[in-house]
Image (cartoon, rainbow, N blue to C red; front, side, top):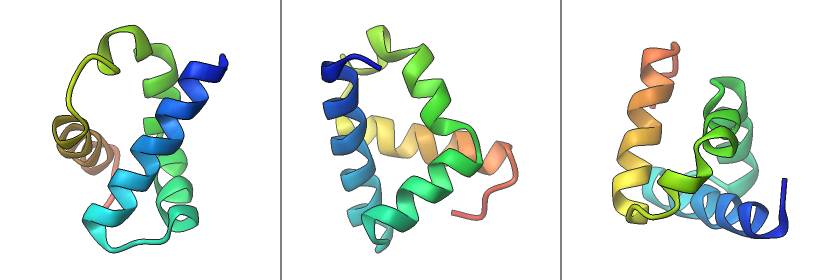
Length: 70
């Protein structure tokens, strides 16, 4: 991952963690388990242009479709 992607994903994990009352480590493990981090790596060019609030909602929905409970 390029530096800008890494910084974006770290910020997204932080926002996701804060929104759902998780630690950053818990959020990262959850997002990785359900493939959301890989999705954001592949789709970064589009997704980083969207708001964090929108991405947090979308990433949670993506994880639920993959079996996640958040």
